[in-house]
Image 1 (cartoon, rainbow, N blue to C red):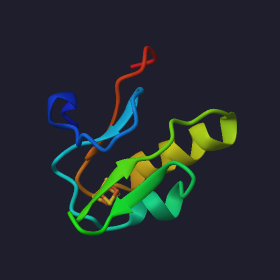
Image 2: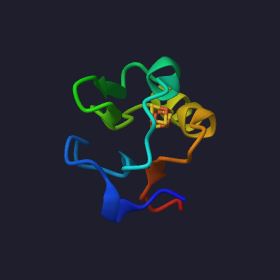
Image 3: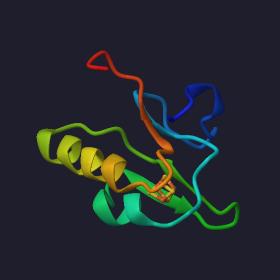
Image 4: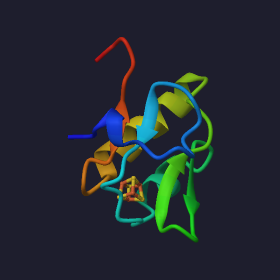
Length: 79
Ligand code: SF4
């Protein structure tokens, strides 16, 4: 389970975040390139932009499902 108390400081403020269990597999960046980015020097992904339309919401959901270690959390009201 993603842990919002262990999210990386690089995540932009908002409901979606990447936590410290990320293994830098790149799946989220592939699924939602507009919302996730890789911090290469530290070896983990982070949320660079919160989803702002239905397409981005769908891509972020795909990213969450694709993440092999459940490192992507959704702290939004729908959860
Ligand atoms: Fe990290 Fe998960 Fe993204 Fe892979 S899919 S880079 S493990 S957050």
